[in-house]
Amino acid sequence: MLAPFRRESDRAPFLDFVAQRPLHLEIGFGRPHHLCDLAAQHPDARVLGFEIRRRWVRAADRRAAREGLDNLRAVEGDARPYIEQLVAPSSVEAVYILFPDPWWKKRHHKRRVFQPAFIETLGERLVPGGMLIVKTDVEAYADLIVEQFLELEGWELAGTSHADPTIAALPRSHREKKCIELGIPTYSFRFVREAR
Ligand SMILES: C[S@@+](CC[C@H](N)C(=O)[O-])C[C@H]1O[C@@H](n2cnc3c(N)ncnc32)[C@H](O)[C@@H]1O
Image (cartoon, rainbow, N blue to C red; front, side, top):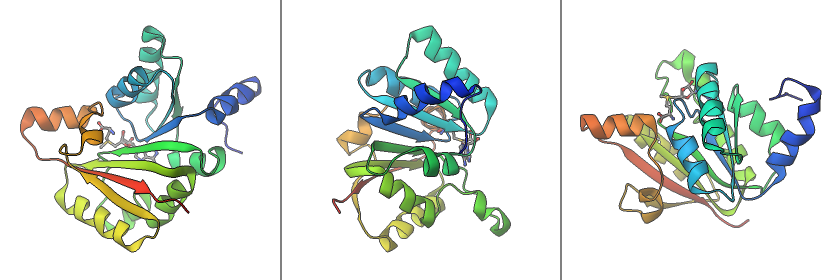
């Protein structure tokens, strides 16, 4: 099993954290604006973030310590195997994938977090009625995301853009703040896992 902790003695507390409800996951949080604001907004929820770049994991840990965000854990590494191995089926309230790298070159497609097999995994981890929030500022990638979902079973596109009250109420990620500042259009989606 992968270990998102350094000492063996940290295993049980980590697994206990992941087992608590409600659980929210953020994949590729980067500068942790959304991750930390989400944890502050939902003190009763557990917020678990994954990020391959160590500096952003450290930034999340520092802010969590500074602000007493005991409900937040940041894991350094590829979210895909961690979620596969550590997160139980039907245990997650919400997953956030915000401004993922599009990786256009064919040889880089395997690096995309947005792949049908992984979306299936996320669907299994969500509770019925749980949501997947996806945002991007790449129009062609937004089209591809919707196209992929239309081919998958068990999902409903429940809301798009900030006209959707659930999307509008979410904190902004660093990239989203940058887009707003620079007047770059963004595309937001709320997919809901249908009851199986
Ligand atoms: C374009 S940045 C967006 C950061 C942030 N979500 C935002 O909106 O500001 C994409 C982030 O995803 C991270 N990332 C890419 N693939 C990942 C993976 N498989 N697991 C975890 N993080 C990943 C990258 O390191 C990067 O920080």
